[in-house]
Length: 468
Ligand SMILES: *[C@@H]1O[C@H](CO)[C@@H](O)[C@H](O)[C@H]1NC(C)=O
Ligand SMILES: *[C@@H]1O[C@H](CO)[C@@H](O)[C@H](O)[C@H]1NC(C)=O
Ligand SMILES: *[C@@H]1O[C@H](CO)[C@@H](O)[C@H](O)[C@H]1NC(C)=O
Ligand SMILES: *[C@@H]1O[C@H](CO)[C@@H](O)[C@H](O)[C@H]1NC(C)=O
Ligand SMILES: *[C@@H]1O[C@H](CO)[C@@H](O)[C@H](O)[C@H]1NC(C)=O
Image 1 (cartoon, rainbow, N blue to C red):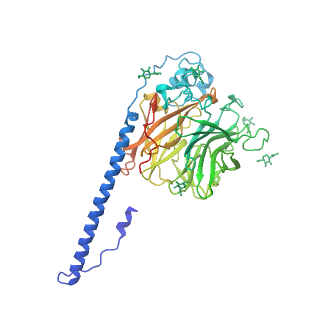
Image 2: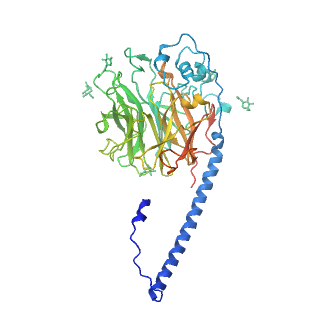
Image 3: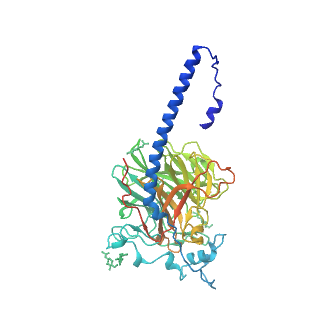
């Protein structure tokens, strides 16, 4: 720690100009100065090289950092609109466009939910569109079916050198369990898709399936299974899935754990619990470089987040837990790390309606976490205040491009949840925040986290080629 030097013992050597001791001391000092200079210069060279590499990567990523504007006309308010639009209105401004977004009969609906004629279909003569992401469009798997992996996350499996995308398989009818219940679909299970290039996805099937009959089982189809995430445990050689388990009214507020020998399942469901004895709704897990994994969950009725390490096998939490972002009412946490600093994207809590994302940063994963601000760049003001009409779920580091990430978000469609769309966009960490934080007096100045809006984009060529 930096403070240590302060408490170093004072130098007790006595100065005596005439003594032999003096010569010895001066030689020693000289030697230490040389050593220091050498390591300093060496260090600077290494840093410069790293910096050069960073810049060259950033050049390739630069076109993704161009600010792209959106020109959406807000229509005049209309007389009649869907009751769903009225109910789920976030408190903030721009309600009219959010209303249009939520209103199934809106004329603007096709802007947010383009129909199947515009679907991304990697298997069918894509020509210029090869490898292109179109946030909000339908996205088909290798069999031509819309990908079903909502609230998901991606695992890179080193053994098979393959990406696995896990998420909620929501391909059923949307309904309301009772008058005041949120829109839902019955649990079908966790879908898994595999890819080598993050664009062409093969359906690997339901890797954790719902229970059809056993009504007391956590995975009974009338319950809730959200935000499944999978990590690999080096020690046990198992793939471990954590997810949000709830009942139809969201009163169970628990995490569930499942385990598999293979990334493509089947996963064996172990149990659910309230971690550390607290309610837990939106959640994620994060595996650090040192192999320690953490659970992060919204708690105390979503008013704060809790974070704590998992045990060595990743099958349970330990008794260590810290409260973070207390009183800030954040959900949908997605963590990532860059150059030793931890970052997190969260959303506000407005049900299926989109709201403003915030980025947070911390020197230690256990906190304290500080809020940096809204990371969304481009589109227009409304796009930025609604996270491009979506809610984050995962941040994937882009191999070979330090500081560059893909942010994965869900554009929820509460009228037809199975038709919710994916919004993938480039995220970069770099540069300083525009304004120092009020309460940190300038230190530490976190790097800026930016998510760039693009109607259409693709990864830089040669991504994934690791520098040796
Ligand atoms: C490819 O797309 C065209 C039109 O876009 C469609 O008519 C055709 O059926 C598709 N082929 C396959 C194999 O999906
Ligand atoms: C591909 O791009 C070129 C140049 O931008 C354009 O002329 C051509 O029509 C495009 N082809 C398709 C199939 O979109
Ligand atoms: C139903 O699920 C519960 C909870 O997992 C379990 O204890 C019980 O044995 C199951 N019943 C049947 C018939 O499988
Ligand atoms: C959910 O809430 C509704 C309305 O309050 C109630 O009728 C129903 O029994 C509840 N269901 C569960 C599983 O708690
Ligand atoms: C875990 O194993 C993978 C290879 O399977 C390796 O790349 C990684 O460094 C290991 N992590 C730790 C923390 O040992």
